Length: 249
Length: 328
Image (tube, rainbow over all chains, first blue to last red):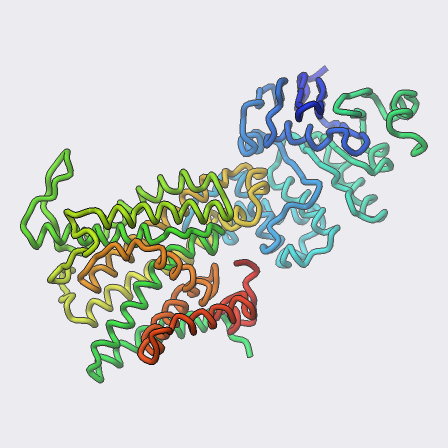
């Protein structure tokens, strides 16, 4: 069996008496989509923040491609290959779609410290940015201001910016949030193809998408992983039913 | 009616050049001095606009750099005019009357101070950032007041304007030419910077730190560098301002001046290339014409500022182009 691209080892995080992350060890294998599901307040976002930086775990390690990144900053982890999308679109609203994508390309190409040539005329940046926009279907909106995009288009742009980074692993925090049935379906198809490029750690509430996509599912309840398994295993697990899924299946 | 911003920019620069030439032809040297004053204030505000407009850092202490520039000129020229040595502790040097040397010293000193102020202030944001930069401004102000060696509260008078190779800087139009050329150079650099990758990233850092970090860039480093460049530009303006008046005093460090620089930018248009230039022209014109009519001209300035903030968020440029700046 090959090495996991991304793994957490015994992550713990408490806020006062609340144990938001309780000994979480999960991993992400090449070409895999590993979904993390759980009720609201289960600690999914807290977990994501510890993986991506921004929140320091009390104990435990995060390993990316064999490299311990636990002590590193968010930006160092991004450079090491973590491509994150946000639950609530966090884009530069005043900028155009293309500018947002070019920002991602700058990170990937390491050309932020240039002061002379226009960023939008730098071909390495443009090519990378436009390729990403093309893939998510936003090429025609390249000159629209981000603030004027629909909610669904912003979600697409979130994914496009992550694509420009050519990450080793994607961390997607509810990419389907707020998308209609049609939009969810399209994004599901897209993510299914994306796994060939880099595996995806997917936090998602849309159970149809999760069951359609995920190779493995981990169920997080009160900060603890109560079960990890294939879609079928999770569906049939009594414990998961009681804790979370209820009659959703 | 809306105009293309590029036309406005061009017209403003042409106007700024034509007015002193006209004043020269009609022998009105005071007008030239007035326009020179506007040009220098504009230069100082262009420096601030880099961090305020693009980077979203409201520095309420930019007079620090204006003052450092002023004192760099004052101290160097004072030692040159009194033929005394400038003792820096580890080595002694003579003063200088050479503008380029003074500019260089002003910019380097401002940049160094900006680095340390930025390092501390950028740990905060919003109101705290405003307050901490204000506090630094006051520190320098009171230091200058008690700096007896260089005039303390009374400041330093420099009797002869410093020299620039090949020019007679005491001729108003020639000194104006120097200031105008420097403003044009800095504006050009500003416009390059604004569209460069660095400018794009800085602009993004204003809008969302988290996004910038997520693409692997450090927003703190971006902002700190912008702060240093900004300080150096405002320091250069300070050196010119001191040379214009042939006088330096602690008022160059005053918080009122920091506030005026912010006001200039808001009048013209935050984050716009020519915003500070238009703002400075309007400000100096009001100061002059309204100041002749009433001592209380600041009241009218206040009303104008209020109208701009309430009705034209993009400043005067925003009103003329019909495009509101999306941010203040």
